[in-house]
Image 1 (tube, helix red, strand yellow):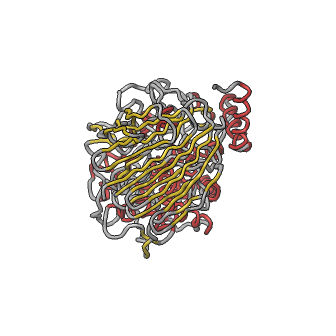
Image 2 (cartoon, helix red, strand yellow):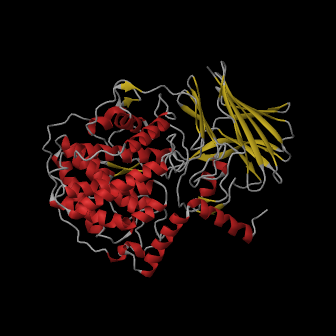
Image 3 (cartoon, helix red, strand yellow):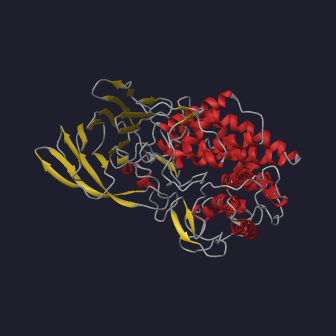
Length: 620
């Protein structure tokens, strides 16, 4: 049954109230100002600086390991490698198709939010995030003068093709902020934060003049736009202030103010972050980690103890979900391929470098023992290793963010339940991620693309992309726009974590906006996990999905049991009501932005209220 117009209006009003009247007002003011051409950004003007931007490193020679990418191949979204020629990239083209942008000569504020002839605009933005600046600086620090020349040539070429405040690459304040952070990181690597060339100072000032006027809009999003842009203002502002810039001190203080505010507001006491996304959590931690590294290098005034406590909590939150075997972690929430500090060749999905760096900075501990590439971030940024070992992973309820993490031996279950102070980005209520011996055996679909053609967001962010029960072919919450759901759910009940000798368990329930009810109980044992789902209140059908993360499963149906197996692991489902359908279907998973691969998905459908019982067991 579809929502009528009155229902939809009421849902939008309630959702707007939850988003915050102040935030809605800030967005409206920004958009009206742009529409009427009276916003300060409509009057920005600037002249592109000229090379050189970096000179030869005056630091002692380094034997640290530089990243291998950005030599003969580029690296997009931390995973897509494309051949690099002698010339700089085409900054205004989709690197996968070669299609050039339309309207690239317009002032950025005259270009629509999703106005791109190339499809997903992130494909164009990726080169302009300037990950390559860090790679070239590392090799230049190690004595490669060709990389230093290349660094200056590429920045000059970027400015020639992206004159200040014109075109798509100036449109997003967060994209500009990432460039500032990468340029600052290169300066630290080359020891030029205090002896900065005039061209680089001017380039930083152009960026801060773009970021500052739209900071209120970024803050209103209650996500990493605010943290990234505040970080760029603090870093760039203090950098310029050291050279005597009056605007620099103003921007530094503004950035400091909002870095404190965002940490206090967006990081929950249990360490959860407002975006309910593991990769955006990494980006937030890397942002604050680099801010703290920069503060120490310039001997700036410390941040508050409250900020440090919040960031320590955020570090422990991420550490609780990262595999000690592979460094991988659940593909929870939105994942756009961002990796802010690409200082090492570890795989994109290895989160250990972030955890190790943040643990040293904010908790003075080490999450991972011994030598390994997870220590390279500390080495390149001259951060001392934490003194004490962090506590081992254990089962824990992160009640502020809505996560239960169950650990037993080398197995972990992540259980997502509804607890929203900020807007949910995916219909993933009651999703389960199951990890055994470092491998993800039941997983989230990921993101794939924010703006694919055809649009596949309904699959990846919606119910089909998660290990949940879907009612009547709809999501658990009505989708109001590309990144916004309405009628945010709350738990009908939630048990405490129950520990005993043989298992750890938890249960929760919810009732959605159409009065469908779902109760899920999870019990993790040494050799299996058991999930019991009780469902009722739906109209015509309920579909239980288990996303099996590979394509080599076989199915067997016998005596009311449905069993699937890949030869090593087995999943068995029973129900107390008749199964209308039980089959393996083809599904998708996306571990990296703009990439997807096929998997098997077990779907079991019922048409009457009842319960499912699922047991997933593995070879010991």
